[in-house]
Length: 210
Ligand SMILES: [Fe+2]
Image 1 (cartoon, rainbow, N blue to C red):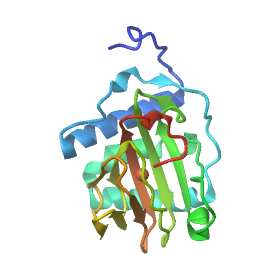
Image 2: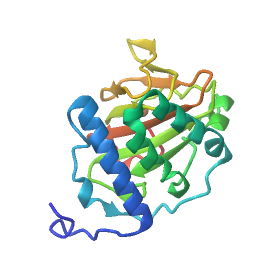
Image 3: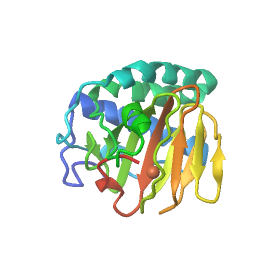
Image 4: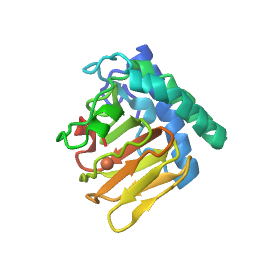
């Protein structure tokens, strides 16, 4: 369906164009790896101006570029996706995940940004796509949510899932967490970088991250 046919106004803002480029690259990568893409109409995304770009936090400045370079060196098939992501870094609204204050290392060592979703730069139906950056030696809190989640692994480090324990998926692989399954991830000696894709009921409304 075209944006006109859907009743939406297609944005021509630079942010929307860069997000569309990113979404095309992510859609293509997912189709290559798992056979199915984002499951939505990438060309009909609608601009959402509620979250203008914020400043790029020092932690992201410090770790994003080296992590992105490592990802494409280890797995060149990620090049288009990582380049499209890199073009968005300075245009996203980076934020901390809400915390209970029990892990200062996580609180100080991570940032998330939503790219596609109701709280992101661009909305695209029932879909939430975001990015996480963590400094070395940081563990993401164990959590669960109704939408199922796929991570595009862009760094070394480990993932954890209920009944599965810790494992190392490797750069360029996908991690699939079914609906409501407890999960986590942690960086090791190198920074963590991942894209997460949430789908299913309520996904687009998530505002804080994966
Ligand atoms: Fe999650």
